[in-house]
Length: 200
Image 1 (cartoon, rainbow, N blue to C red):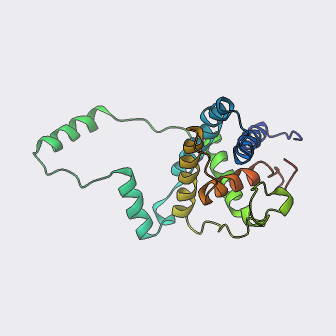
Image 2: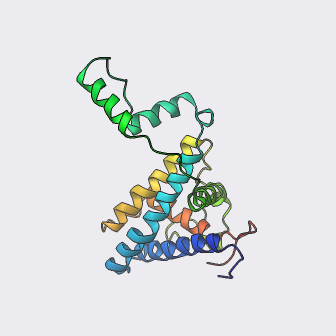
Image 3: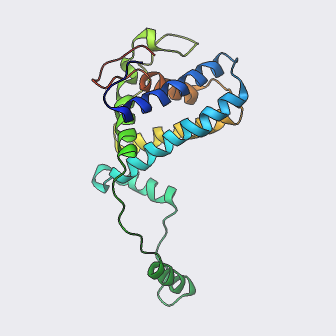
C-alpha cells in the first residue's frame, strides 16, 4: 500500500486489508484459527465498534424514517418512563442525579471510520471483477444494494459485527451475510484517499 500523508486513513485501510486477508483464508478453508480469531477480535471488531460509535455520534433523528426510529428505540431497550412516585421512578431520579456525564469531544478516529464505511457501502456494487474475492458464482457484487437510509447503514454495520463474531467463533459458513462482509472489506481495503481503487 502506498502511504499517504493521512496516517489515520492509512491505518484504517490496513485494518481492512488484514481483515480481508483473514476472511479470504476462511472462504478457502485454509485459515489458521488462532490468527483468524486474533485479527478479528483485536482489529476487525474494534474497527466495527468505531464505525458504530461514529455513526451513532453523527446520527440525527431527522435522518431516520419513523419505522427506523421505532426499531432503533426497540434495539436500544428504551422504554416508557416509570410512573412518578414508584420505586423505579425514584431509582431513575437518583441515578440521573448521580450520573451527569460531561460532553465528550468528537473522536476523529470514529468519525473517519464511520464516513469511510459509508463510502465503502456505496461503492461495493461498482467494484471491478478483479477486486471480488468471493470464490463462488459470478465475479461481481453488483447485486448488493447500497443502503438508502441511515437505518440501513446501521443495519449493515451491525451485520458486519454479527458475522465477524460468528467467524471468530469458528463458523465458516459461506452464506450471503458472509459474502456482504467480504464485499465490505474487499472495497474498504482498496479505497484510496483520493477516492479511487488501488490493488489490495
